Image 1 (tube, rainbow, N blue to C red):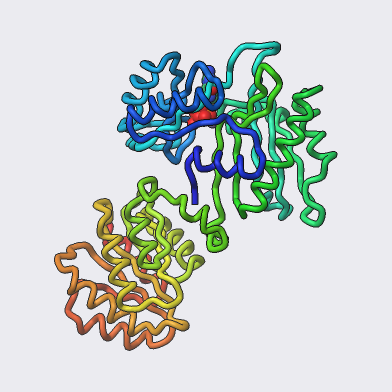
Image 2: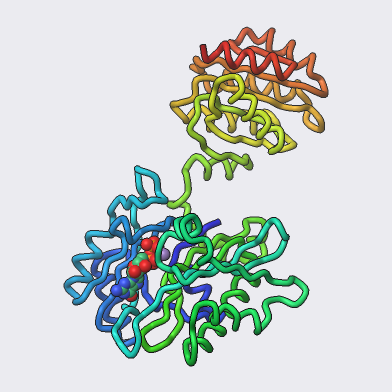
Length: 396
Ligand code: GDP
Ligand code: MN
């Protein structure tokens, strides 16, 4: 689960990570109040208005703007609130902005130049260990840094037995070219950031940029956090940060029906039990000349209701030209799934696209019979290769 920048910053602050302070607003008037309150709290003379959506690259799309007066705050917030913000990460349709964060300006002039770094904490799946990834090249697209100047990205692995050690945090500060007060602040920043990542059971903490201010403070200016869904049950406060506005509505509906659904761009809808079989089925669809329209795992306990819910969700996608149902009857009985398909077909009505059902395993024969006798435009296949051939036929 992803959370907003302002929520990620709140979380960081709780763990002692220094942040660019801010107050959220849902209307331009609230933005003005927020800016005034922030100046009382921090003394800031300028403010940054930041769109709160679940996507990065907001600056490039016009979703992060500096305001140099209270009038500016009002003007800029009215532009950003309600806009359809398009960034390199949102897709061409963009995302609607419902909330802005009014943040203190932290790029003020002083003794030294402000400097932007990149830092993230994530799991290195190759070694099974958490790692810190960081770079002197902050503020910009890290994928581009990785491609063009990979030697400017550093990695520090953490031993799970002892956790992040002080010498490692000092190495980070050293590699970032810091000294004096900034060095000490960076060590504190890194230790606190790692603690936040670990104790929230997160999958990713990405701070881009980490800013060294002109008076040598180290603070998080941006924050992207991805929480591990499987650990949310033990973090009620974090689970409450969910913003359904930011999620694909069909995926939300699927979640409510206990279906594991991911929307894709193809033309063959598929409904499968088990994630592994679902992946194999998607490969098979491609081999028979189609493109999967979705990933849908109905789980090990598919029944008539889940099958119907899955059908309704797949049919919402206008690109779907055929549906392939591929279910292995292990615990689940094929005839029950077949009955579910027949019922769904009748209940939903007006389904005029070909449906290919492959039911293999317990009671497969009964299932095939049920489908044949239903008189519906459903084709049944027992072998995977027959199912593939029928998908091909359906698309021709
Ligand atoms: P992103 O574009 O979604 O990654 O949003 P960020 O929070 O990273 O902000 C984008 C950019 O806005 C940063 O890289 C900074 O260059 C700029 N920015 C953020 N905060 C401030 C600020 O306090 N003052 C100024 N002048 N610029 C800022
Ligand atoms: Mn950023």
